[in-house]
Amino acid sequence: MAKRMKIVTVCGCGLGSSLLGKGVIEKIAREFGVQTMVEAADVGTAKGYEADIMVVQDHLVSRLGEIPDTPVIAVKSFMDEEEIRALLGPFFSEFLQKGE
Image (cartoon, rainbow, N blue to C red; front, side, top):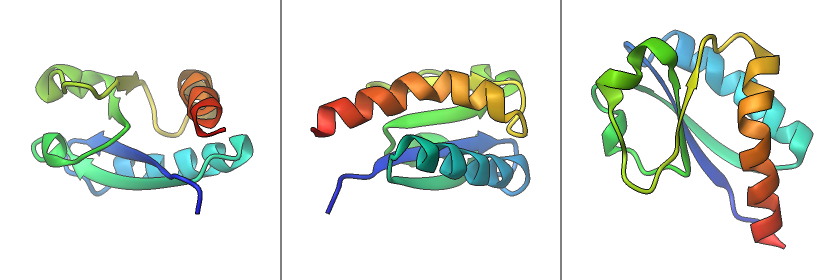
């Protein structure tokens, strides 16, 4: 079984936009051929999740802070597929290269 990239989407409450972002990221990952496990979280508990990448709304980055060994990607909108594709595309490509 192929390795899955673990991604956590982060918003204020972990129920609205982070769930929307989860769907958008899963769609884009499929386009790249990357298997993912995407979880939605609120900014207060996100640090407790293990992830290859954290994707957070840009206005919450300072509340999330740095997470050792985990890239934190700030997005303006979880609805903007082009923005998310541009930001995560390099991570997906690198993930695929490491898996080969």
